[in-house]
Length: 423
Image 1 (cartoon, rainbow, N blue to C red):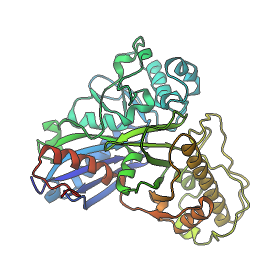
Image 2 (cartoon, rainbow, N blue to C red):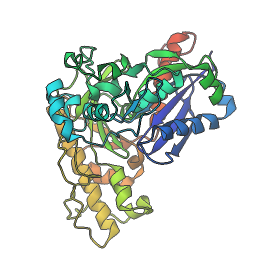
Image 3 (cartoon, rainbow, N blue to C red):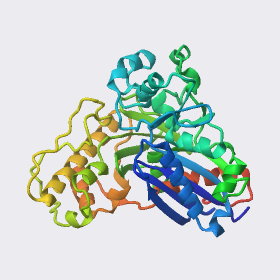
Image 4 (cartoon, rainbow, N blue to C red):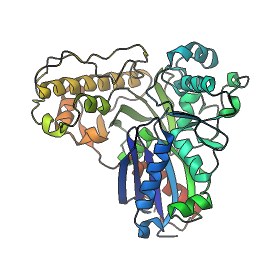
């Protein structure tokens, strides 16, 4: 088993990425593909996984001993007892304010599930749309169920915004009388062994029949695992959405739009904005943003006061389903407009770090940045000037982070494997 490898599957907003690592956490292989349509279609999630796994070189695929999956936190699908979707999924950035009054009767204010952008509001909407017996599964849990051919289980971090309590290790008592209570998964900790992949599924994908399926985490947490952040560093993920994360000694105080996860035995608190790189792609379709960014003087202010949201509604650093974006005025110069948008994103990041500090997270002395935006040096210099602390970039993909969870579980199953960092 000494040459066994681990596979990470990262389900993002726009597509899927896979990564293969060895027992020393070296990245051996990575590939990605976009969804055929968009995040609303579970078939696209599944088809992307099939395509990418089957494309892994056979010499690597044959040595895979375990895998784990991460997904967008809050994207929820209703399916039947056999895992077949009953309709489109509701993505994480779809707010359901009409369900908010019922949510407030079920969970305390300030908890991750209490938000108009949490999973619970989407679960209530899906329960209204589909009256037949159903299962409610987040993106990563649905793909994990497909691999196991068993949709019974769910990973704890992906279900915090649905109401799962990490401290109490239970669903709220208020759920017990709800008609959809049986639709919720049995929760397992991140990094725990869920089972062995379904043999027929393994054969179809060209994998070993004894490959282990490990409980993963959210996409943002997977990104954090790749960063190897020091205790005094905060983590910013500049992907389709803007995500802030911070390791803490204890859970953060309850705050709308924020959540505290347990990853690798450590508390990880943070929040995710609806803003991010998706706004930039929408504003500059087909334009090379790296080239456009070179025209920005990062030592100067743009003079614009923009609030770059992808649409109406925000979840962090403020939880407001009615907050409207401010995308005008748009100057003639695309470079100036991009300058203003990057400043707006950075102001959201500043407010986010302030909010996490108010909730009990230590103020970071440095930041490590991941995601596509980490590759933009002008944005990094602009952020350093406005936030006022050093920033470094990490380019390892989130799929490699969730692969680490699979590797650790595999090493625990086979103690003869060397564990990096142990004497």
